[in-house]
Image (cartoon, rainbow over the protein chains, first blue to last red):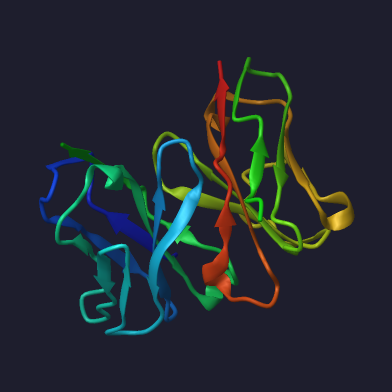
Length: 113
Length: 115
């Protein structure tokens, strides 16, 4: 079945450091790819998405590019802030699942001042 | 606009007891989903309502889990009897019918601990 793999956390960075969270996927169809973020005490929020190969999703300084050849959708940010501390989930959806998501295990990011 | 709300935020029960989780979707959202995250692993789909009808319940783990959405508004997820492996965070999400899958709005989750 379809699956999403993320780098194991937790990830601890200093403020203004460069962030990369790796995400790779396996899908039988042609998936749309997403990054969701969960801030402490809140629900999951859509951070960014890409629906076809080579698309780049971006939001709040975060970026991720849909790489079909490497089945990857790595999340990057050039300069993290303390407020970026959260759990980040990579996810996909395909026609096989209708409207439902397949999520990765999540990566906890802690940014220190 | 109020977001998706879930109640309770935390629940601690003993094995064999019954627990009912509630989800109030965003007003006007006909799609309602339940997911859960067990032991810090990936978030897994449980089921999907369209209005009051179950569209897909392929992710429900067993018949100890019963979801309802009477009237097509709020939904409940009952676990009876609860087992240790049911511990985890249960998320609810909702979306409008006329917008694609990328607009699911999630609640904060209910953390269930079964002792």
